Amino acid sequence: MGTHMPAETTTEKIRTERRGAVALYTIHRPEALNALSDELIAELLQKLEAADKDDAVRVHVLTGGPKVFAAGADIKGMAQATAAEMARKDPLGQWDRFSKLAKPLIAAVNGFALGGGCELAMNADLLIAGEDAVFGQPEILIGVMPGAGGTVRLPRLVGRLRAMELLLTGRRLPARQALEWGLVNAVVPPGQALEEALRLASEIAAQPAEAVRQVKAAVRGNLDKPVLEALANERERFYSLFDTADQKEGMAAFVEKRKPKFTGK
Image (cartoon, rainbow, N blue to C red; front, top):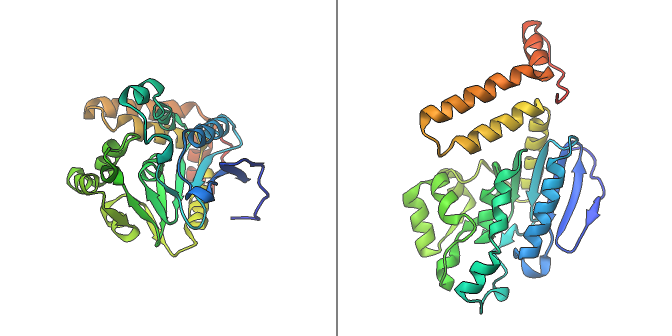
């Protein structure tokens, strides 16, 4: 998608770039297979939230690079912790902020997406996997359980029975099976996940911005609501878009049989 632009920001843990209206974030802890420390997640959230408020950004894309997405949490830092210490520090509480992002987040996954890596990928609105991608929640194998959404999001994506199988055995799910189970949108040849994610992001970025935000908010917000309440919320959001310039332009273009020129307003 366009010319590869130099990184705007390089840190120890997250690299960020702009590709037109798309913000790209690359996890960069190669020495630790991109293990997710609390500091890394804090940095990623800070960058996502800043771009989420930037009108020039329409879509977020997150990747771990060509070899590995994220091979779990940073176990060394918590191995000797007590239950009281974990509850007091609440290191996973910050993960709730992913759900508050207004703009679409696409994950491009290569290699391992295990434990916290799988949970991070499941926070995305769309997920593209390379054929070498492997998903799983192996926490049971080290005496714990998922704590950043694994027992909540996985059943919603693949169903209760399949989720239980993965969660209780720690088994790994290869990309093709993840596609069959509904965990990912598409599986592409090795090395092409980011390219496909950026192509998809570009397509979404060209849509009317407020309508895109309202679609995400409706789908995310209505998943657990009773049907009638969810339908009322959807209608309210639908009606609100009639105060946008893009709605007027989109419908006028349809009537006039031409391509719309959306401005994001």
